[in-house]
Image (cartoon, rainbow, N blue to C red):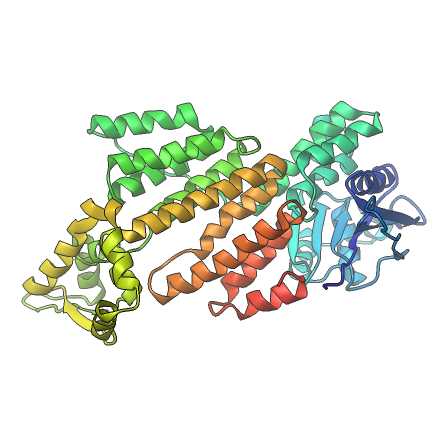
Length: 496
């Protein structure tokens, strides 16, 4: 049985910034959702010469029959804190200096505005600490670092920094609570509810944008000449938010290049259906879903690989790379070693499944794939071989690979929809798990295996899985193609 550990949160706030209210909110959030909670505080000397440190620990099991109250700590210990919330950039630096922030464990959430210390103000020259230096040290010290000007966000909403920090805490995905559970905590307080909710929403939005991939500006494309393609592009602004439109347009282009108009329409249908599900209408989630769905729906099967290898643009690029001169001949040799599974998955589904079964046909086919072969695409015979394989994309929907990938995509979207209903931050992390599924051959097999491990964890832990935990597992899987770091991360988090 894995030993459960409390969630440990340190809050560093100056007088008048609502640090005590923030600590009380976190305690209320935990206690109303099945966690034992305890908070303590150590006041500073003055508003700027020493901030108050609030410390909260949450432990699951409250309300369960026979559950015994745990013994929780009274003070944060260096190297033993999960989350540090700092109301000002220098306080984040103080937390790093005290050893409360560690790269293996701690999520650091801070405002980037400054309230200058007495020593900075009374220095003979410019005694201000360089903000970039503070940010650099904090970024190196933390596992996850979320920062933005929370003072401005509080001013815009007529609230205080504590509400913005509470929203950023939700947006970070560290705690296993939904947005509704966070906001209900604010409502129960009964004081300044409306501005606090507005500040919470702005804090959560900024935290999510900090973590999600930045949106790249895409230059407008010429108007399509095909009426069916024009109709597809007209759907995008009607069915998706503006923030996701540019990515969806690129997704449509990719589907047209990969398959056909009907396939691009299926891509938009999936995005539209996702956007209509509870909790899945976030522009950030839909933008990420548009990107990762396009990548998954254009998986690299043998048909796609053949198509890419014989494109005129590839031949031109190779000629440029080798600086081909006039009257020189260029020979391009493709070293190809398709696995048995890849050959079977390129065939019609029934035939592919039959060949994958142990038997004489399977053994004969396996013998032919033990050694790779060289295909000279610059020769007529080699080019025609890959050209013929690339033309089979017209029958891609009949293949075993199409059936397998369609089932995987459907399952992935179902998990996103389910998580979106109770925790959209977790849904976003599930969307980004698609990053593991890429390439072809052994690379694809290893990535798919790691992806399935994460999806199994999502299924087993469901509502109790914190978004940041899934993110950490995903990062570990991406850091090591053999899965050693993922297994180590699973053991450390007791998720084997």
